Every structure is written in C-alpha cells, then in structure tokens.
Image (cartoon, rainbow, N blue to C red; front, side, top):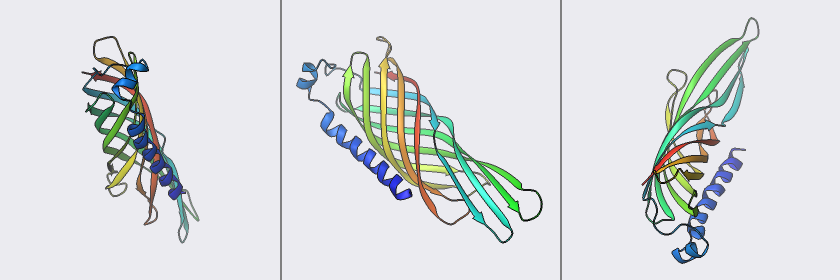
Length: 218
C-alpha cells in the first residue's frame, strides 16, 4: 500500500511537471486562443485555509495488552509567494501548517482501557514550479510539482522529525477587478514518510490538502 501511494504521488508530480513544460503556451498561441496578453502579474502572494484529509491507524499486541492508535488530519493554513519568470511559468515558495490528531487506546487483559491523545504539528516548507497554462481576464489556473521538507513535532507524545516531502498542486486565482486582490483556491497532494507510533517503521503519508483564501497580485 505505501508503495502504491508513493507511486501515485510521483505520477502526479511528474504529470504536473510535464504539464508545465508542454501546456504553457507561446505568446502567439496565447493571443490566438483568446488568453491574456503577455502583461500580467510578476508576483503573487497567497494566504489560505487548508483542510487535511490524512487518516491512518495502527495496532500492536503486547504480553497482556492490546494498543491501537488512530490518526486524523485537522485543518490549518498556509502562505505562498510566487515569482512569475514568464507570464506562464512561476517559481513558488510555500509554508503551511496543519495538525494530526492522534488517539491511543490501550486495553489490558483485566480492567478498564487507558486513553491518551496527542497532537502532531505538520509544517511543509516547499519549492514549486508552476505552469499557468490557462489564463483569461478573470481566471488564472496553475499546476505544478513541488519538493521540500516536512517538519513534524508532537511534544512529549512522540519524537519530532523532519522528512523529505514532494507532490503536486492545482490552484486557481480569480481576480477581483483591477485592485490586485483575487480569490484563491488550492488543492495539493503531499507525500512524506510518517513514522509509526508502535513499531520502528515508517510509511509514506499520502495526504490531500485543499482550501481557499485570498491572493494579491502585482
């Protein structure tokens, strides 16, 4: 299962990179297709709410206990800044934070079960290459891969660690008149290793992050 998740995210990132290269139109094609002219924003700053779809569970049988831990992604937020080197290609740096709610239940052979909860803060710091392959006067759709570091901290619940993360993003900006403000929507697939609580192994955390907010373009 982890291998399939990793392969799926690699495919998404690869397809996003391919789209950046092949779908970004030349200026002549853009004019003929009714897309925006070469003039456009050079910088975009986005701030958004993010929901995290991550879900996972694990269990272990001890000498006289049975322990289960379940994980569920919880919402957070993010920021990213993009510099458009051409009207169709941008380099993006992003930082976000969501958290994972962990619930641990230990059931002994005799007596009541013991419950413990923890919160794992997840902070990806990424660098992306975005292709703005479809731009109209009131619509800007972008797609691209990203790579970076994913920091996970959980206080006393479990050790903190930092893992390599990668994935792909699909987003849309809808300008609000000529003010530079825009409504922004974003969806990401992110993959990174996630250590198990009960065993000395880790698997790939394959998670979908989606949300929306505001952007400023200039």
